[in-house]
Length: 203
Image 1 (cartoon, rainbow, N blue to C red):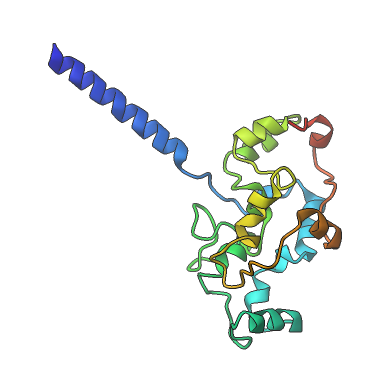
Image 2: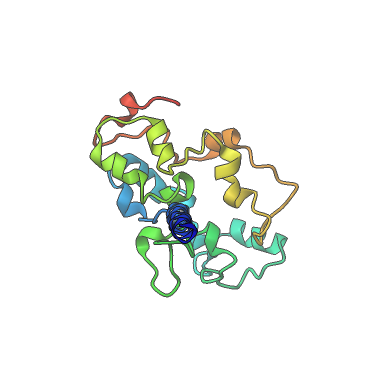
């Protein structure tokens, strides 16, 4: 009898461990192609600093402002950093993550700081966006979607407070509300294919 109890308990432990491990796997990144219903936001993003984040690492066409930043942090202003693994986590989408930017097979949809860098990998919540005309924030949050305005320090902080970043400066404070005022291209409103905004609750 004890033998059977042991076997059953072992099976239960295995199932629970496996299922929790499966849930722990991060959702897959899809890139900007997966967000194409948000047409106005995508157009703004293409013109934004985030949209050209990888370009700022390239030597060709580098602005004086970027050169000055590199010099400030004792980086070589004449070096191309677009394949530097220390830089790519904050200049591409989902670098080294499931479905994210891959140096060996670079995908244009994952170039720059795309939607999913601010809203989380869309593998789960984009299904809600696609299948429902109406949904609540609580649903998409449960599916892994992030909302920077709810916790800007956590979301924006992945890069702007990243102590491992080669350009980290402990003296520079990143103020989300102030940055929003400064940024020229920012999707303050989204004209969507469906009427999500009218139906979303702020919880």
